[in-house]
Each structure stands twice: as structure tokens, then as C-alpha cells.
Length: 183
Image (cartoon, rainbow, N blue to C red; front, side, top):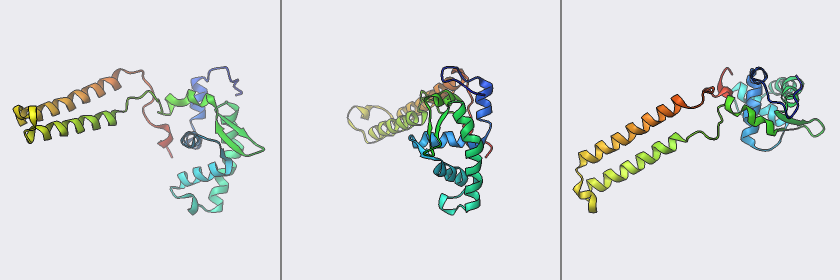
């Protein structure tokens, strides 16, 4: 399945690469780290994730089982596809530039609207508005409390509708974070 750096990854290859929870976690971990890591450290993190424990609690058998699997199968497969770069001499593993091609499959689209921040802003502005109205501050003294309350509810309602429509009509992709599926 040798891929040149210039050819586009087919959907079949992407799905094959992401079919393994271990490979998905490797990509997730390397993305989180943002810099090269040693294969042994990567294996320890994968083993801890798979066993739902801290790295310090792992047995040598748990570490070895994952290390061998990564060394013999998963890292070479990702390296061959050009998704990661593995230097056997130093034992360092890093994401390759080509890893960005998997972003939409992993639910890591950077252009995603940060809806939680939008809702937080609506809540803060709503609380500020209601406080100003309730304490009869300046021009807000003329606004009845029930009008302010309705305005806040309408703002949240419109935000929810916008959020729904955004998700409904944007370019379809896989919604689930593949890293957390089928441990």
C-alpha cells in the first residue's frame, strides 16, 4: 500500500488506517503532543489508555504487548502511508504533514464553530442585561424585567436554531470522534 507524498489518500486507505483503535489513538496522541515522541513513550500512553489506567500503573507485560504491536504493525503502516514519520535509529515518531488529510475523519476540523463559547457569551450578556434591568441602572430602568427575560430566552432560542441549521447543512462528515469509539 505504498503511498507517495503527492498522491491523495483514497477513502478505502483512510478507513483501513483508522480501522484500528490503536492507530487512531496514536494519531490522537501525536496531535495532542505536537512534537515527536519516542516510540516507547507512545506505547506506554497507548497501553495506559487501553487499560484505563495511569502509565505508572502499567505492568511490563502490558507495556511490551503494546510496544511490539506498534513496532511491528501500526507504526510501519502509518509511516508507509505517509501519515507519520518514524526514525528507527532514534525511535522517534512524529506526525507528517500528510496527517492533516485525516482531520475530517477524526473530528478535528479546525474551522468548526466554537458553539460552547458562543453560548457562554449569550449567557454572560444575558446575565449582565438582566442585572442592569433588575437594578434599574441608567437607560435599562425603563425596560420591564419580563421583556429582558423574554429577550434572553429568544437569544438562546435563535442561537439553538442557528446551531441546528449549521450542523444540518454544513458539508457532511463523520460526526463521531473516532479516537473514542470501540476501545
